[in-house]
Length: 123
Image (cartoon, rainbow, N blue to C red; front, side, top):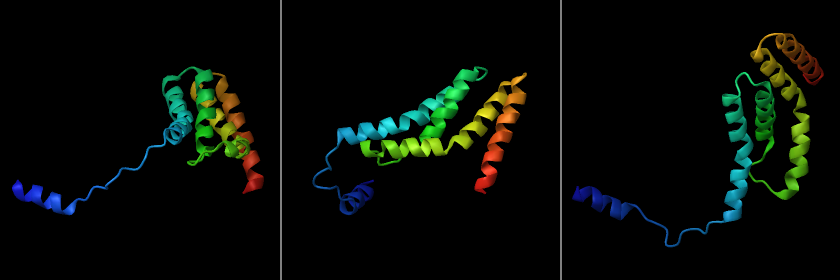
């Protein structure tokens, strides 16, 4: 055991000073994770509740457009990227309707078909 301690003591170097922690940067990064966590929880716990599933789809799509380095100047870019993903939202909402069952299956299939028709010109 003494050899291991000696080896670690001679090979591992700790920095003399630790970097300062920017609390606002940490809070902004945690805030950027909020749509992902909230969307996951709503999707998981909202089975059978169509409102929760719709909110989960909206939050999860929002989580895909939030950049890692988030600034207040990027809010308009986030909104534009979110609106550009509306065909994906329509498709995922169609899946939520199909999953809900009943008569809503027809509406879900129509939503998925419409989103497919929207994607065709982009391909």
